[in-house]
Image 1 (cartoon, one colour):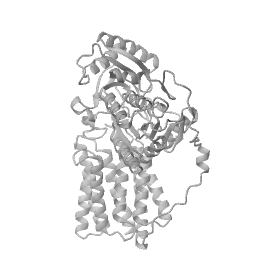
Image 2 (cartoon, rainbow, N blue to C red):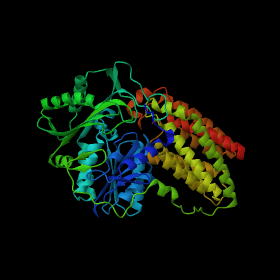
Image 3 (cartoon, one colour):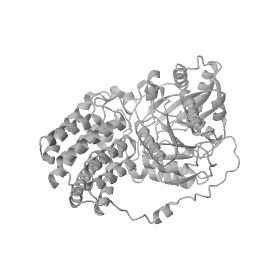
Image 4 (cartoon, one colour):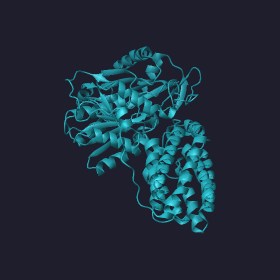
Length: 583
């Protein structure tokens, strides 16, 4: 388990601070993550990778010449926010555009996509690519739904080496697509991981059993089998991957492959070598030529006891890129000429950050009526933060049934940050709309992950609807919630029945619109809608997830409500209490 920490909520930030202090030869800190400390040639494409904390050496440990130009680092097992990614990408940009790369998880897809839009608005050409190599998480016919696990490394490496050669952005993207299409991974685990501050692992494996088909966020395996010997584990990994070859590879015999045997956190290197000896023999028997194999911890999951095998089927071009030199804190290959320091960008120290004088915040002009309404908004956000804090552990337990168990952590970070930002804006005389939009940005930024993106969208939609000029009446609030519901569905793509927060948000918005349309006062209308939300959240226990990290573990989640749906129902009831106190 994770024993050494201070405040669990600060673990990711403090880990990144220590990492940058230890590796100033390679990286320098920027808001949201790290970028290379060495100079990047003008016009070179910047490859910016990222994801949640808890996977070291992914993602920050892979920043350096020959690999990533920057890494955006989120909270534990949560994607970085769009603001963090935008910050890192802007710092890494050298004039040739940016390729944003990440594992295929809903939160990462949302936030990296939003960051790409912001970069484009800044005049920086940007593309995105999600690695989807885990064959256990979806079948070949749904390969786009697969998770990204240890296959991140060879795909990142191929794209970054192409960028180092001076290729333009579209060609670097095509290299990433080629490498991704030829990469497959499969893993097994013997115990789950324990998040900082938690008193139990996210999942357990019965004695003398192993979980098969694991993810890297503490998700339980797809199934269980008897605990194997090292040779039996090697055979399972190799035979499973050889059953699914890329479309243009008819037979493994005579093919070349980059091979990664990855430890997920607490399997000793000696154990990995015992397994790899048999992996190498089995691949040799199949006629596969192994090219520059990697055995060690490359994409971890805190202290999970597990291993995964990755095969990237190489052609001449991909082999050239896989063999290309790299020099990063955690991954080095070949030899590079001496690096030129980035003299134009001095490292930012913690002390400098602490002593920097921020610009005086300003808020748009607001009417007296809107500023009074902002007080009610602030009270509602305070109620949200309090109810989330009271139920954070419960939300984590629900989420861990078929997901990664971080929903409570992310919601606590997001709601606390939103309330703090709202209080600051309210203190400056902001209207209701601005208070909500400041809260939206803070929630998305601090929570990260899918829930951060969606709650940022909800609050921003409400803020836009309320504005700063008029006193928001019940109909305006109801309309804002309806707009928020549509925005969330548009952003995340989920619909009612997918076992997500949408299963609560849509009926809540519909009930609120109907009640306000009948002329009910806001508190009464909200009460009716919150009752609908509570019933809808309970009903998600009978659904099988069709989206998100719980989708590969659909059967495990049956009988348990969706964590996002449950937290939304709790929030709607808490907000009703605030409305009663301030009507």
